[in-house]
Structure formats: C-alpha cells, structure tokens
Length: 163
Image (cartoon, rainbow, N blue to C red):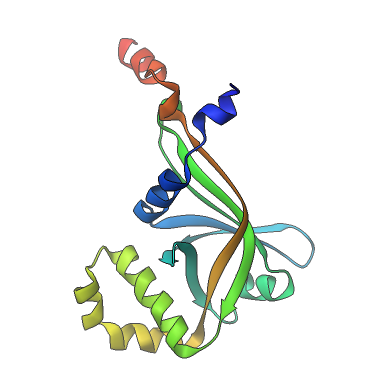
C-alpha cells in the first residue's frame, strides 16, 4: 500500500474534520493568472464549504471571472500530527439576501464559537453586515486529504523531547 493511501481520510473523517475547523486558505485566480490566497472563516451548508465576503472584494471579482477555487483546511505542528483537506472546486455564488444571511449566520457562529441561540440574538447585526456581502458555496470536484497520525509513532516529538 502506498503511503498516500495509508494517510488518506475516509469520507466520514473528512466530514468530521471540516466540521471541526473554522478557517481555510482560499485560493482564487487573479486576472494575470497568479493565485490570490487569503484566510477565510467558513461554515458548512449541507456539508459543503461556504463563506461570505464583500461583493467588491478581489476574491469575488476573481470568482466571477473564473469560479475555480481551492480550499485548504489544515492542522498540526509536528509532522506526525499533520492533518488536512484540500478541495479543488467551483464556487457557486449566492446573491439572495436570505441565502447570504444563512451563510453569514453559520460563519459567524463558527467564527465566534457562539451557540446557534447566541448568534440568533445578533441576527440583526449579521443581517446589516450582510447587505454588502455575497456568499459562496464550494462544489468540489476533487478532494485530497491526509492524516499523518495514521502512520503511527511520534518520532518527531520523541526526538525533540530527547534533545
């Protein structure tokens, strides 16, 4: 078995990992072909990555021109702890105010750590903030994942503690 296959996450592990995350690295394509990379808080809409941003932002303009994106969610400091999911997909824009608000509420809840009830109390603020925003849902066409904990052993951490 190839090491790549050994460390790949199952669909359930990927779903759980995405559920536990808060931030992602979002790459869009600038007009000159160079990547535009930013950190975004995200939410999940029916299990799919969703985020919102200002309608006039660079990432919005990039996605309008070319909807291909990549999203990286990762964690871990030592090699033996590295875990991540990289989604290659197409960003589908949500314009309708209720859809934008739904994504905004989800992102706000995850970003702040508030419960759904707590976020509901600031709904008016989120709605006001959303007036200049659009939302996107990422429809993945390729998912790559890794979980180095599956390799077993703590060689890097062990070596550091022995030094």
